[in-house]
Image (cartoon, rainbow, N blue to C red; front, top):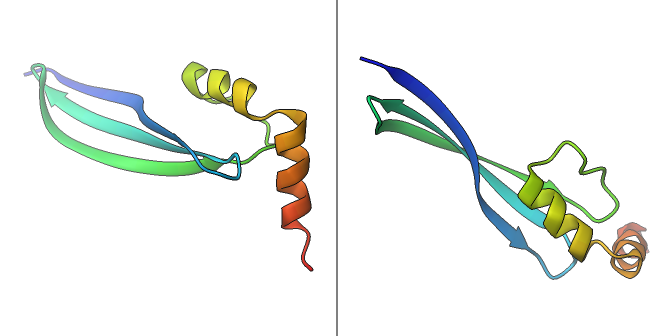
Length: 80
């Protein structure tokens, strides 16, 4: 009986304001058959440091988080 823990980014959504919602799946496998899994979600906002993120998330952030998107997002965060 061999147990294996597999962690993967299985869903990346780009929201209208430029934020990325990232879902990470942690699966426990026994002899190659998944016996358990759980999910964790987090958000990467425009302007956040994403250097520690998964390579797929980094690539999407590099494409989506332009200077204009970051400026618009940050301006919207200032309370009126």
